[in-house]
Structures are given as structure tokens and as C-alpha cells.
Image 1 (tube, each protein chain N blue to C red):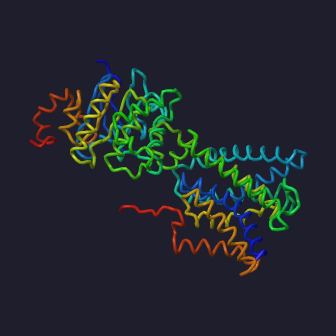
Image 2: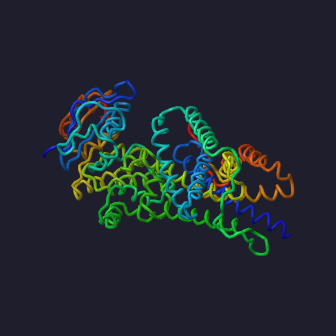
Image 3: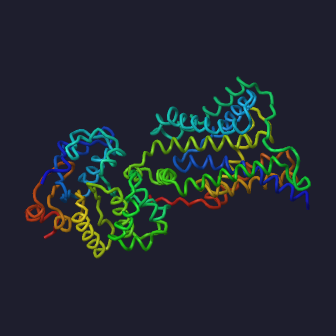
Length: 236
Length: 289
């Protein structure tokens, strides 16, 4: 598998203060990679850095092209959809309008069909499509956020803590749908998660970050067996 | 009784103009949480532009359309040139910029056109309607502003650009992640606010006459209207505009006299802020600390 996203020596700054100290990792075409780490390790920051939402140095290649100098809006147009932490719901818009915003960069005729495709993954969202998005439950808003990202017809999905604040059953459901999306749409996924065991089950590749540095990288199945990961992140 | 009806109707007519100015304020406030103190003076400058075009011999409606278009461009340009570099500046810096814009527009208009009061033509016939209940300009102004508000509603509700602007105002970060060019949406908002102000200026000028200070009072009423409706709610701004227009007219005729009318706007502003800061339709802001 060739790499869809290749990151080399990525550094990022809040103001003048460096918060990522040279990360290198890759997401294979059509594959799933996960970034693991404790609170404050820099996982969310890494996703934000990929979308140029803060000052970055280093090299980011998407499909072979350098993207680290481009604006957030242009990076999105290449087919990178970012589901941010906090879900980024447009609370005063209806569910359907939220999805339309997700497709706002597209000019093709396929958008109408994409509503049905996306509702197919999330039937609950369809029931609520005329409702204000702010009235949805946390789980439904998470589904809506993923659905909104899918409306872009992305090649790469950046997912920031989709399990955050959700009941375990709901988390399992969302992870099952993510696997389905990955297979059916051939969308590559870069997943940031605190729930390491679920993430390692889903992912092909895994990277462990501690305070802005990469400390471990490898196949997800092998990382899951590593003594240090087991103790610190899987809890057995 | 007929006197009261007359006051209410003419209050609704000026109210429609306050409503549009209030809407211009709310459009910018919603997206940036800034109150543009220069909104009135921008509208005044637009009205002088219309006056010059008409004086140069253009027919009224052509001058009207040109003024709206040029005001839109000027609004976009002000956002791009003056406000863009201050995107991360503290709010006080922006307040100073807005006051600076206000003084600049006011003084430049006075310098070019002098402070002599000018008459501004109405496109509507001079005869009063319905046995003197309402002048045709008042009815026409109401029609024009209501038509404009309806167009704006359709634009924001049904077009892709309107949706992008609403999204950008609500959640700029998430909008950027969906590919919305948020900076341009702000500039468009400024352009539209300037265009709305231009229409309001051209509709109020035949009533208050044209001079560089013509919008000072109107803007105060518009602030009152926006606050009554809830400063972050466009529908509220429009409803508030009508309420303030009627209140001003009726109170002016029966309670406090015309000299103290403007005081009423300030009383409304202070009253709303003390009693119900979120206004009729506004959202109560709760933040976790």
C-alpha cells in the first residue's frame, strides 16, 4: 500500500511556543491509522496542524503533493475532511443544512444522491433531518459530524475523538460504521483516540505520541502487544 | 382615532427604515460581535452618492441601483482594507476604528457637499393616500424596505452562498474545515450591510432631508431596534425596528413632543439593557467558567 498522507518532521507552534517537535508518520491509501496518547500529548494539535489551523514547519504530502503551505480552505478542497473535537456542529442550522455545508465546495450533480448514501450509514440522522442540529443528542451530533465530513466525498477523513463523551454502546456503533465507511467508500482514516483498545482494533497502523514527540510506531496489532502500551493505555 | 392611526402608520414607515439599519448592524454583529458605529455614516455617504448621480442627470431608479451596487463594493473594500489587518486586534482597537470611520465619512461628506441641508427626491408621487392617512412616499418606502427584507430572507434561506454566510457567522472554525472561505464571507456581509444601509438612506432622506448628520438619529433608533429584538437575531432586528418606529411616533405625538423623541431611543436602549439584555428574540448567553 502506498501512502496517501505522508508527514515528515512536522512541527507546530501556538504563538512562538513549539508544541509538536518533529512528527513523522503516514496514512496508507484506503487504510486506517491511529494516533494514540494521553491528554495533552498533541493528538488534536497534530490534526489541526495537518489542516494548517496553526503555524507549522516540516513537510506534509497528500497524494504526493506538498500541502503544508496551503490554506485550510484549499486543503479541504483536495478531499481532506476534518471532524473536529467538539464536533463542530452548526447548532442553529437544520441537520440537512449541516450536511449541505459539508458539500459546499462541491459543484457536481451527485450531491442529492449523497444525502441518501450518508443517511444510509446514519438512519437516525435522517429521521431528524428537519430538526435544528443543536437539539440532537451528543451521539447524534457525532454521527452528524461524520456525515457532514462524508458529504465532501473525501479521500482522507481526520477524526478527532469520535468516542468523546458517548455511552459505550454508541461508541461501538460509531466504530462499526467507521469500519463500514472505510471499506465501502475506500476512504482513508486518521483517527485520534483516547480509547486505545477500540482504536487499535480498528486501525492498521498506530503511532504513539508523548508530549509532542513520536515514541512508538508500527502495525496496530503489534503495538497492542507492546508492554508499555498495554500498561499505560490499555490498562491490563 | 384617525390621528392615532396616522401616527401608527407613519411610525411603521420610518420603522421599516430603522428595521433595515438594525438589520445591517445585526448582520455584522452576528458574524464578528462588533457593532459598526459607522453604519449610519456609510449610509449617509451612499445617499450623497445617489444625490450626485441624480444631480448629474441619471433617472432615479438607475441612480438607486448604481448606488446600491457601489455601496456593496465599498463595504467589501472597507472590510478587506481597513478591518482585515485588524482581525486579531483587541475589541477596543476596533471600536476606535469604527469611530474613526464615522468621523471620516461625516467630515468628508461635509467637506465635499457642505453642511447645507439638501432636499432628496422621492420616486413616489407626492399625493397622500387613503384620505391623508399615509403619504405615498411612506407607503413606498415601506414597500421597498419590506421587499428588500424578503429578498434577503430568500437569499439566506435558499441559496448556497447564503448558507455559507450563515455557517461562517455561526461557527467560523467548523466552516473553514468544510471549505467555506470565512474571510470572504465577512467581507460579503460588510458589502450587504452597506447596500442595505444605502437603501435605508435613500428612503429616509426625503423625510429627514439630506445633510451629513442625517443618520445620527436614525442609527440611534436602529441600535434601540436591534437591542429590542435581540442583538444577534435578524428577525428580531426587523420586528424591533417596527416597534421602535411606532413607539417613537406615537410617543412623540402624544407624550413627550417631537423635541424629546430621540431621548426615547436612549431610554429604550438603557431600558432593554437593564430589564432584558437579550431582547425579545435574542439568545441568553451562558458560558462555563
